[in-house]
Length: 280
Image 1 (tube, one colour):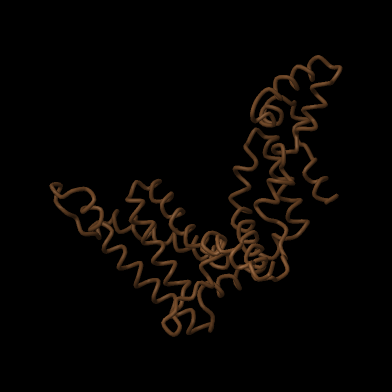
Image 2: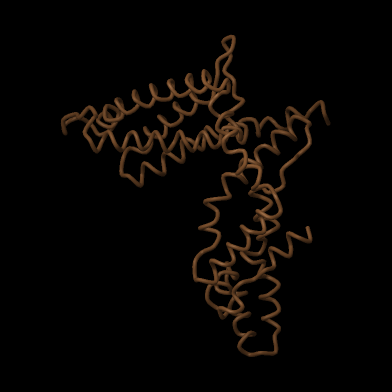
C-alpha cells in the first residue's frame, strides 16, 4: 500500500494541494462581479499576487508549500486586496482608458494593466518586507498571527457554539448555515485539506472539524438533524403534527419547512446536532 500511496494521492496534490491557488481566483472573481468589473482578469491578477506572496523559487524550483491549505488565508487576502485595488483605481480613473471603438476584450485588458502593476509592486514589497522583518514568508507569518483563532476553532466548545448559533438563527427566521458558514468554512476547509496532505504523507490526521465532518455527521439530514423529528411527526397521533410531517417528508429539503416555518418558535431550536457532537 505504501508503495502505491503516491499514485493514489496524486489527484489530491493537484486539487486540495493547490486549493489556495483556486480560492484566490474564485474569491476575486466573485467579488469583482459584485463590483461590476472584469472578473476574469481580476481573478488572474489575484493568482499572480497570491503566488508572489506564497511561493518561493529555490535553486530554480518553485515551492508549492503554501499553495495548499497552508496558504488559504493568504489567498483570501490576495483576492480581496487585488479586487479593491482594481475597484479604487477604476473609480478614480487611474487606468488606461481606450476609445469605445476598441473591442471589449482589448479594452478590459488595458483597463486592468495599471491595477495589475500596482498589485505586483505591492505584493513584492509585502513579501520581501515580511521576510526581512520577521524571518518568515507571508503565509507563515499570517498563520502565526491567526494562530489563536485557527487553533480555537478545532475544539469541542467552538463547534458547540457554532451549531447552537446556527440553530438559534433559525429561531428568528434566518438561514442559520448561510450566515455562520462565512465564519467557520475557511477554517474547516483548511483543516480538511491539511488532513488530506497529512494522510498522503503518511502522517497522523490531527483535525476533526472539517467541512465534510460538519455536513456528513453534524448536519446530516438537514440543519438540526431533523429527519428523526419529521418521522416522529409523520406517525404522531396529533393530526396537526402528522399533517406537517407528511407535508415535510414529501419535499426534497424536508428540514427547511420543518425548522423554518412549520414548527412553532418554542420548538424550532433543535439541539440534536449538539447532542450528536457530544456523544461522538
